Amino acid sequence: MSAADLLNELTALDKTLSSIEAVLDPETKKQQIAELELEASKPDLWDDPDNAQAVTSKLSRMQAEVERVEKLRSRVDDLGVLIELAEDESDADTLGEATEELNQLKYEIDALEVRTLLSGKYDERHALVTIRSEAGGVDAADWASMLLRMYLRWAERHGYKTEVLETSYAEEAGIKSATFRVDEQYAYGMLSVEAGVHRLVRISPFDNQSRRQTSFAGVDVFPVIDQADHIDIPESDIRVDVYRSSGPGGQSVNTTDSAVRITHLPTGIVVAIQNEKSQLQNKIVAMSVLQSKLLERKRAEEQAELDTLKNDGNSWGSQMRSYVTHPYQMVKDLRTLYETGNVDAVFDGDIDGFIDAGIRWRVQQGRAE
Image 1 (tube, rainbow, N blue to C red):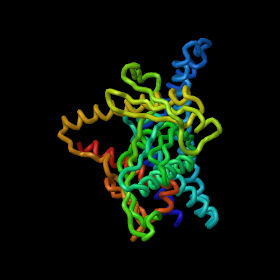
Image 2 (image 1 turned 45 degrees about the horizontal axis):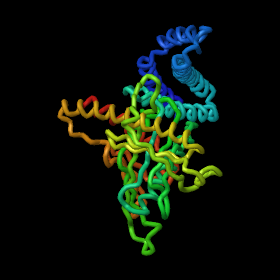
Image 3 (image 1 turned 60 degrees about the horizontal axis):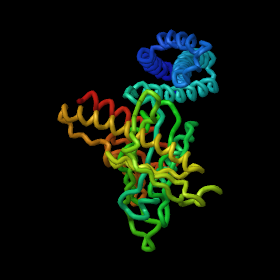
Image 4 (image 1 turned 90 degrees about the vertical axis):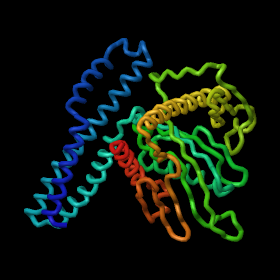
């Protein structure tokens, strides 16, 4: 690529970043940061721990947002100087360095642009993800475990903290279900587009005749609750059962009735947690997960009411992606039509393209409505 071509692409990238800056408004955020810093410096801040946590979390989040935009702006400006230097000195090595930096900036600015599209009520929250095996027998249970690994690898690639809260193992292979948490700002907004039914077509490793098998697994995504949500769950609305944990575990697991299953009687929602060492710890985690599921249910009901008013029959969250390893290699999103032939990379957590396409598609659907 010539220096002139690089400069043309950099000009387009600069315009994209400028539009992002107009949305994020870093100057206004700096004023808000100054106000939050003043509040955070008050001696009595921690007299109210909930408020203190909210203030410090918001401050940290806004500082990170402004720093991210300012660093990208600085790199875009520096790259212009680097390209001009390469052109003036006819330096192929410097031109190559500039090309690499341009490609990296494209990736990072594109990711930031997608982030600006996450403006839903709970999009900034951390996420709870539940994966469950559906039709397909042992293949479906194995498929559910493959999806669990795919999402955990995605989070690992980005350095996001995760915690598996519950795993229910299937008898022969794989899992019946699993719930994990992603502690990262906007995790819910990103992963919410992954909710739905995922279909796998492959030669079954569990069929001695090596026949092709289609199996299904479902993914549910919930926003993590915070102090402002105020979801009251009367004791009379829940049934708590305790039982012995199953599957792999540490010294305390499988030896006592520490696993907890909570059933929310009005809705029928069931949460089972067995990964913690004590019954009390499992109950605390289970209640937290139940509250998140109730919060998502409330959001879905509100959305359903809006959809009814709009006469919207769209059900984009049902069967949404197909993964095929035989007779050809293809992963295709049935809503966005985004696809790739590198199935192994997808299974290893390379799903950013699908998430970005899903977010953009959802915004377009909202505009069309």
